[in-house]
Length: 379
Image (tube, rainbow, N blue to C red; front, side, top):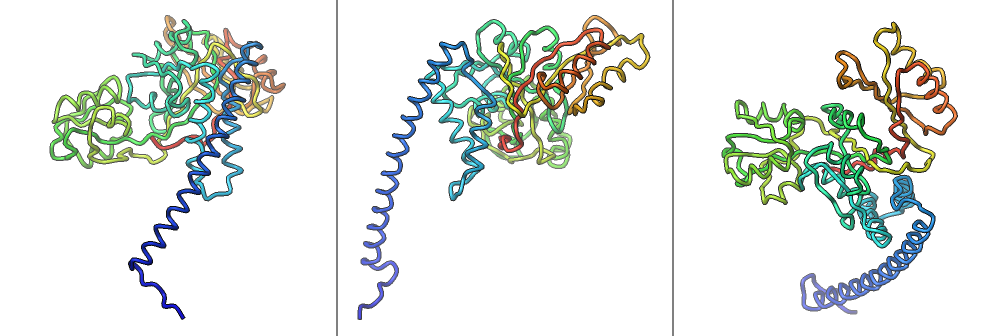
């Protein structure tokens, strides 16, 4: 009767090495099969691109990508982690789409901002990402054809609406073609990575506000500097050893900074919603949101009630109501409404028509596929 081999014996090491070689060879076979399937997918994507070009269809479809990813996650039997499916297949989709045409995506720059992170995550490395200086510049880049699509922040779960984005819609004819959710996790970044070296903290105003409790507890009395973006704060920290920046891990990598502390945001559900801008309206997806803007006469008592009542009467759920001052008209307001459904859905179409009849002016900003909470990875 043979004796069992002792662990770490030469014979056991030989057996382990042989088994490791066998398993690696099996992985190599699977990788080659995956590569063949990726190339088959790419050929199909190229055929779809040619069909879209002949038919005048848009290259990008938010609804199609959302449904593909949701279907893959739903059919995953493991052990491959479901959380990894979305980033892996977004890159596959982006690479395949680049065979049709490399999309240019405008975002609020510079590189390293959360808008950059959201654009890169949503459209993949194969897209050409075009940084702009302001949110208005994102709109202008898409309007003038310098980019096919734009990514702009519209609201945050901690700090609320991004007013610059709402204001930019007033003078724009662009349509909303989709949305993206990005979980925001703020890091405190500096050259040394030591809390004791921090003399000033820099970031965009919203990020400073989202980390208020942590800053008051850990850096009381330290000067706070508001910058144009989290990336601008990271650049400042890279230039001054006494400055710590609040920003993303991407910003830390871009400017060679060390994280003093990760995840210093006050709320763990801190998420920013981004809108995707286009010159072309998307097709109905079956799970959509519609955004519209209205003005009413301040001289009419109950004007706002009459504006909102048709949505209740038609059974249309309003998910957001925001007001903004009307340019050039003191104490008059624009009302931005988000509602469930597509503008072509009978109940939504009827509610919009009845609301428009009571309004001084109105415009539908877009009907677009809804994002899902599962599409909000951590920054």
